Length: 112
Length: 115
Image 1: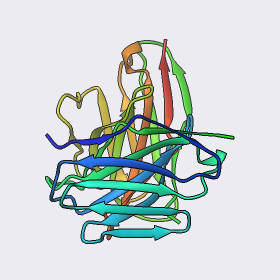
Image 2 (image 1 turned 120 degrees about the horizontal axis):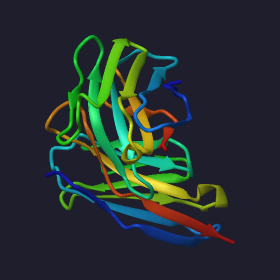
Image 3 (image 1 turned 180 degrees about the vertical axis):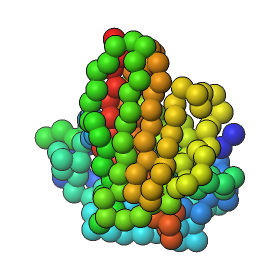
C-alpha cells in the first residue's frame, strides 16, 4: 500500500535551523502537507505544497519537494523552543476520497 | 478561518456504554469530514470518511457497527463508539475539508478512556 516515512526524532539547538525529511511512495499525490501536533492537541496545518512545485516558503518555513525522488523536507529557520512538537508529513492518496496518508511523525526537541 | 471543534475534549466512561463525539466546522461548510484514531506516540489512522447526507466509507478493519458515523449537516459529524471497551481507549481526531479544496483542517481531538 501507499506509505509515508519520516525519521522519528530530531534534536536542535535554539536558533539553529531544523530540517525534517519525509519520503512517500504514491507518485500521483497531488498535495503534500506538513502538520504540527503539540502534546495532547490536534493537528495544526503548517503548510502544504502542490506536486508541481519545487519549493514553497512561508516566513520561517521552507518546503522542498523532489518529485523524482519522492522526497519532501521542511526547514524551520531560527528554531525556537515553541517549535518543539511532533511534525507529521502527509500525502494525498490518489485512490480516492482525498485520503491523507500520514507518516509516523518526527519529534522535534529544541534545547537551549 | 477554517476552524474545527470537537466535543467533548475528554471523556471517561464505563465499559459497555456508548459515547458520542461531535465534530463541527465553525466557519465553513464541510462536505467531507474524516475520523482518525491515534494511539500513544503513533501516527493517525484513518477510520472513516464521511460525506454529508450519505453513508460513511469505512477503512478496512474498522467495524462500522461499532463506530457509528453520522454527517447530517454541512457543519456537523458525529462518531458514536458503541458498547465501548478498554481497547477503544484512544485519541480520536476529526478533520473537515472545504468543498472546493483538498486541504483538511483538524479538530483538537477527543481523548476517550474506557474503564
